Length: 375
Image (cartoon, rainbow, N blue to C red; front, side, top):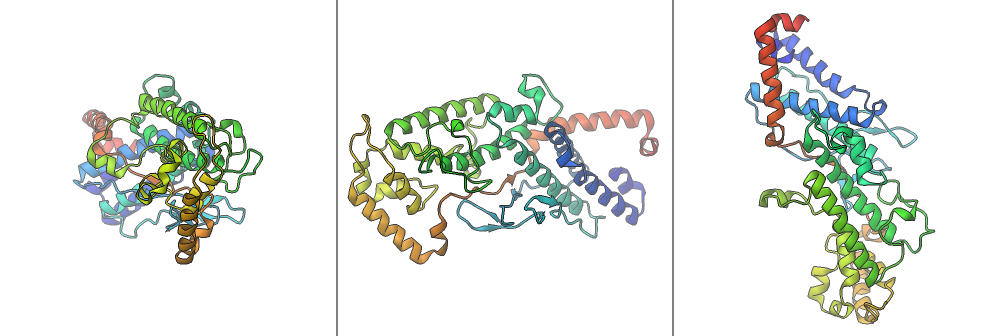
């Protein structure tokens, strides 16, 4: 409709059609639909945006978009820096009112329409992540995103979409499990609905509070099993280009670093350079590292306790950090980063776009563009 209006209709009608197309995507009753239906809707939206971009010769930059907020209404990264909010909270704390997309007044410009459309995609994407990230297993999450592909069948949706969703789910699960494992005991209650929500300790790869060399090895083994499954089903751990690897972080980064720290000979931590490079560089917070090392229990694989000089050095670093950084006192639990929507690359969408344009060309050759608009 928009393509036809741009060719034959006056500018005011073009703007009206553009606004209606954006709100039709935004008002798809995301919260009332099953997840796989919403995912399929998002897939179609992405393909249609790319078709319009190609027809009008507009390059769509794959700019990452932060799309989630914390329970207090402000989005934060792992380092605690604030992020822009894309929708409002109700008095009950639920994200109910869609306020993230501001349709530009001059929708006669196709580039403005595509920007607004991409914001809608970002919002729908975040709803999918919120729906599936807490699923018990990765297979359960996959079933909710696309039951057909999860069962080994072909589907009309974009294959890359499930991968993008699972990357965000894994990032959030990494933080949630990291925080749960660092609790004093399994009976300790969750402290945050997003960053520290795990109630059932049975879902953890190692018991909460059980920090020793053996549990580190067990954790590393679990991470390896998860990574292989993600590679087989989504290609998430496959070798990417140098450019992509710089943009994307490694899966289970915190859990990997925790397992490395638990298995590291504690005498090596006396060296300042090793402490800086090896001890949870993603966390980078002495308070969290002290929590890990203070709760470390020697076992048959690592019978030596953590040297007291290491704890003294870390305590000094922690004291210095608290003097210079006011947010350092709230370093635990670690805060989950907001969901990041990276629109699929054209290479990942090209086949679907080509298929849709061929279908449209065949329909227009039979009915003609005018007749198709009025059908």
